[in-house]
Image 1 (tube, helix red, strand yellow):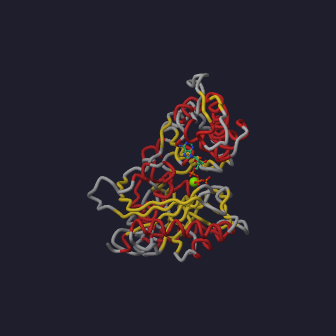
Image 2: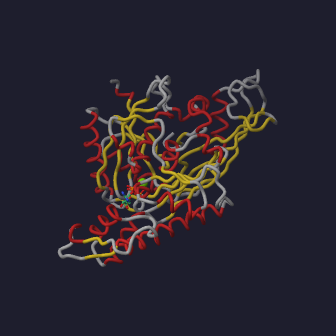
Image 3: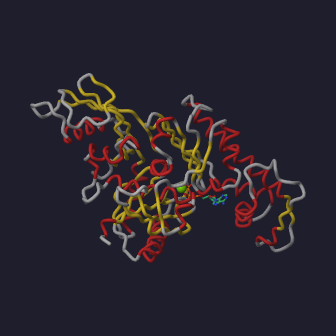
Length: 417
Ligand SMILES: Nc1ncnc2c1ncn2[C@@H]1O[C@H](COP(=O)(O)OP(=O)(O)OP(=O)(O)O)[C@@H](O)[C@H]1O
Ligand SMILES: [Mg+2]
């Protein structure tokens, strides 16, 4: 198998580093991607998605690379890498250029120039552009054009969204990946890669919120009419549930985690008062009986708090209880039993779990909600590199749009160009 046919995504989370390797399926296939390898290792040196020890982070990423390489039998050379949702800003921008050709036909380089013009926004000194997402073009006075290439006009405008990330954050991430001996293609805002693979273009048109519940934080992105309407990072994740259980049961974090994984339910309503958990079976020194209902009450309180924070974000954009395609829950924390029901009740919206769509695999990791971001990064890479070439789409907006189509507009990283 040709090496350039493989795409790698590295999701550096605060609980685990996860890597997925996939290849493009022929366009005749119903599915878009075949995942040939996926691995995870417990992450060290990463907190709230930010690297706080380069050395530790490098060894976690290296260990994960080795693990996945053993699985696929092919060395990884480059990867798309997730960047966390904290400290990123979303802003709207406009670009305007005159069409270069005298016959007035709009070419790819006009599109590149106009997008370049939209990129010239005031960036705070410690921030840099992560993504430029063209929303729609205007040719002369005709608005709302999705793909202007081949059209005629004198003046080309673009409305774009710019996502900026903290420079130090991006630099540390690229340093970490570089030290493992592989090339970082682009840092990609994790939640965008996640949303890309677990929602349909129709959901994004109608209005949908993708909520990724990680260990230390919950990140969300809301789409409407195919565009990003809002993004937020809430500093509460599933690890907070574990800590609450540890405090409530006066036990260790490790035992509390096992209690959560084996016995927790998002809602305590259906748990009988007589159900008991013996902590000795989970590693405690002595017999210690705790009520499962009590555990689930603790879990419910924190889960509801997370959902209240999500609701607060939806209120900011006037979409509380008002997203027709509802909520898509993903990330390791979304594996909590009963979460979908609790979300529906709390947010008064349809809710479902966000498994990767259009993916086949030799590993059942694709059905693990914690792997959605890593798999989303593989798909992101496929969108950026046109089929049959090695050319990156970073500057080739028109073609990329064709490939991704209405599904996710044209997305490309502005980093490192
Ligand atoms: N079956 C389960 N039930 C409840 N919680 C679970 C389950 N499986 C995993 N989790 C929790 O999911 C969390 C980890 O999620 P994930 O692996 O997505 O985080 P991460 O990506 O490493 O972190 P972050 O995105 O915050 O940087 C942990 O708190 C873990 O306890
Ligand atoms: Mg994560």
